[in-house]
Image (tube, rainbow over all chains, first blue to last red):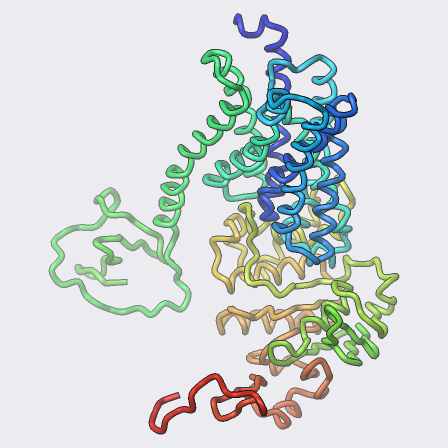
Amino acid sequence: MSLLSYEFMQRALLAALATGLTAPAIGTYLVQKRLGLLGDGIGHIALTGVALGLLTGWAPLVTAIAVSVVGAAAIETLRLRGRTSGDVALALFFYGGIAGGVLLTGIAGSSAATLNRYLFGSITTVSDSDLLLVSGLAAVVLAVSVGLAPQFFAVCQDEEHARVSGLPVAVYSVLIAVLAAITVTVAMRTVGLLLVSALMVVPVATAQQVTRSFRATLSLAMGLGVVASLSGVWASFQADTAPGPTIVLLALAGFAVAAPLGGLLRRHRRVRAPFDDSGAVETHEHEVDHPHQHGPGCGHRAVVHGDHVDYVHDGHRHVPHEGHYDEH
Amino acid sequence: MRVQNLTVALGGRPIIRRVDLTVRPGELVTVLGGNGSGKSTLVRAALGLVPATSGRVELLGIPLHRFRDWVRIGYVPQRSTAASGVPATVREVVAAGRLAGRGLLRPLGRRDRAAIDAALAAVDLADRHRDPVAELSGGQQQRVLVARSLVSSPDLLVLDEPLAGVDLAHQDTLSALLAEQTARGVALVLVAHELGPLARHVDRAVVLVDGRVAFDGTPDEEAAAFGHDHVHHHVAGPGDPVPGIPHPMPATRPGTPR
């Protein structure tokens, strides 16, 4: 494959792999907490961090990590103190972040093109040292979000119950926010700050169309994230498009396919679920003129009802009984 | 659980005022009261979920601020749903109840799984354990939350309106289940609007009115004092305006149904 012979392409694919795995992993917890847009808010805060790097001459990746970690912890603290709701706390930092970023970039005298590299990613300019930092951080995020999965699940599912279970809920909540901040900066070079939230939310939304358990949702979302990221980098190379938007649009295409599929799947499960047999009122309503003989493979759906089988026929539930059919 | 002289203020407004409440092992105490009477706040303060302004709380004989043995406490928060933003199976939600006794990075063991199976069977949901909680009805979700509180075999159970939306047949099942817990020596606090099928299992009923204990005694005495209708809200009709404030509604004309 010619693609892999380019060194910049190898680095791009590795960075995409790191993003594809971590963003949905931490995104699953954010969606569970109904804070799906936290990643977006942190992305905007990270912009101030990038601008700070441009202004001071420090590496933007490092300043972005520092500022977004502080910002994420502040959002969670504000929310946990109960003074503002999660979405309002998010909005405050969201606007502060983008305003600070644009202001500082202007002072630093950097062009809009420089900022664009961080807003929409520039995966093909990832350097060796960038890659080392990105994969190190991604490994930490993955290890924590998978290793502490039972604790994170409990905290995101029901905060009050988690507190009465003796879990340090504030510590875990801030930890999740900090991991999200690290993920945002990991993804900054691949999909960019404006689109990073998409990789945190879209694979999770796609996965839950077909999954029934938390564990399956988490694993499938990570798998979908990897597929979208790697195929996005490959497609953008082939079609000469920007990698970030290509990755996000591919992830969204996955959702567009999964949504109707999930609908069909749920319908299928519902139709086949056994009828409840507890305390049902048995109406002995005879179906008088019914020439059709119900049986296996008769074309009508057979559904288990207690100790026998009902045949669903035009909205009726038919049961053979001494030469005629009863309505159940 | 022992609560002494507890006062709780939320946002500067006193919600619980000098309340005493003691629940002994093997005792089932219900906290009754209308909306806004402070019954939820009382149990939440007793568990440390909201800070108390003054007073003392002891859980299982240990002052609240030093209490660490959370595995011995079972709690059903007041919730309308057991679901969240991501699908989770009934089993996954109930398994969260085993977390208090589990160390970090330790997977579920054989005993954990057996306890989860037993709790699911006790609330009659064993056959639904692989279904997503969001697909269950409201009453079934309440039963999932009760199973989660039972799964760590607690010595103190605190349930905040666990019977909301549960059908009568399963209210009976749950009442019997709770009675079984008290028979084993579990101290049980139950917040409710009304006693319902629980009445015959309840040892003591505490009625809160406006943050104060208005009554503390057996359910029979409670029924005699308050009548069987436990809806204690004050109905303000059009003929009951606040003095000095013009009434916003026109007076009801004779013959108009209210």
